[in-house]
Image 1 (cartoon, protein in one colour):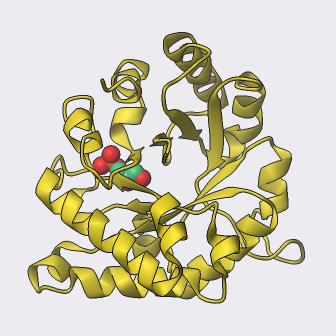
Image 2 (image 1 turned 60 degrees about the vertical axis):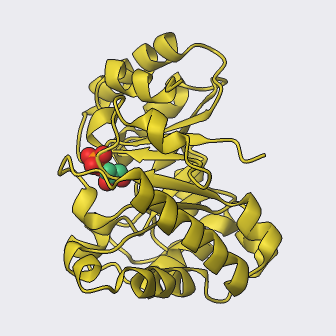
Length: 250
Ligand code: 13P
């Protein structure tokens, strides 16, 4: 009932030509029909050409961030409407790298989420604990706080398109994937908490992705977990061969 989503976050990689070439190759490799939803997130500068390349294909395109205001004197920022105007349909919000290095907070995540929903962009809201938070037993409290902060003021109906992405910070780019037991434990907890905080039906329908050192060698065991509905992939989404292996995990 929850169609899986495999999303590639290219982070700060690929200039326009490389992004477009990659999109073409990926389309060839993945074909015109996929068993899971597939999304790639290029940098802002490549959004439009990548969207043109993947037009009418089963591969969706998302931005890596968004700003909450729709227009005005905000030098350097990009609005939801601008993202949507490129043809992109998704947006990543609250990635831990934004939280760590660019001052993203639960409050700004909430504003960005509202902006994305107002333009019908499908938001991928990222949450996750640091190494220290896990080792001091704070994981569940941190995740609860991030969800509460992100979803503040939004009704279950408004939250329906939201995709949650659980990305433990210590697993990102480190090769240390969380064990299947850890992932299932957290995902089940997240679904339960979303049900309590919002509504059971919303929680049951919400896709919860795992991210953090996902590769073709570990995707199958992750996807076999009851509460894992896909993956948000960084490094292994940068090469067509490895990303293809993740998209076709079974
Ligand atoms: P890696 O797959 O490189 O660990 O990155 C995960 C990530 O941050 C995706 O958003």
